[in-house]
Image 1 (cartoon, rainbow, N blue to C red):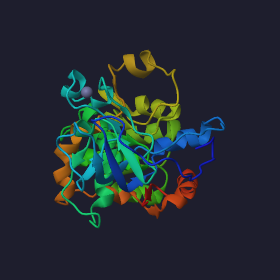
Image 2 (cartoon, helix red, strand yellow; image 1 turned 60 degrees about the vertical axis):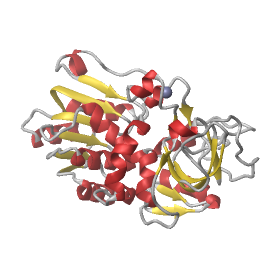
Image 3 (cartoon, rainbow, N blue to C red; image 1 turned 30 degrees about the vertical axis):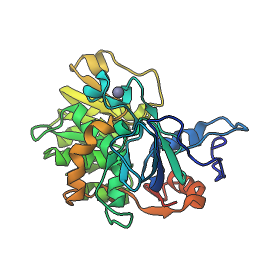
Image 4 (cartoon, rainbow, N blue to C red; image 1 turned 180 degrees about the vertical axis):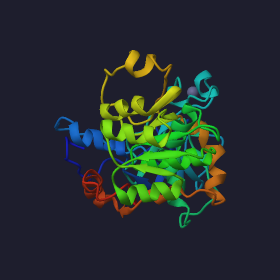
Length: 335
Ligand SMILES: [Zn+2]
């Protein structure tokens, strides 16, 4: 990406081992993330540009001499952050804060160098032709980001839920909340084709209105109180403002949309007065991956339904355009 709106496909040096703990993974599927659209809107133009992509599944091609658990030919899922899976943060389940970790940024490509391969990659017993590939790819980021939103909010069978945002993360948060037992899930989104998938994933109510009008409608649906938990899956300030508008006193707002703001209300009229807690952050996908993998492998959930368009590498620039124009919900990349 050379600047806002300027995505190009170019030949670069092949991914190669640099450290003995590295692996090189050939990408079988990657995708475009909603968060990739933020630089697509705002990245200053530059001559060098930057590589893009952080979600991928693929096949191990090569391993460094210290890699013990992986071998050539293994099919793997890569979390969007790499981590050693051994430091104190990883042991606490916060792999996105790993002392040695970092975030991928080269996944919209033919192959990726994976640092800390033993700690990072999770094997999956599937072939490259598996029908499960789209759903397995969502374990790299989008579905487990929705799951993280629900976990950080404490969603369970006794909590009502509002999900703000009908993008792929918001719909994933609906599915995750349903999986965790939530019986009342209000989805705030205004694109009917997307909220229809949200209903299929478990939303019990859809509110298309936004702002004060949307807040009032959610309150009316919940006896005036709002919901115990709010999963904010957008990242813009108006979504946060709706979140504290619809959260029930004593409740939790959990944010997983990357905030595009640094300043926001936290005072009496927003968080303090109702004893509202604020949670969320980048999802430690690695902490959840092995736990949720069987749900995908055994067909209990199908989070890959968020993909509604497939492109090859040459089609990636048009994939960004289509997602930005909301022609596509989420674009799958098949190199
Ligand atoms: Zn770590």
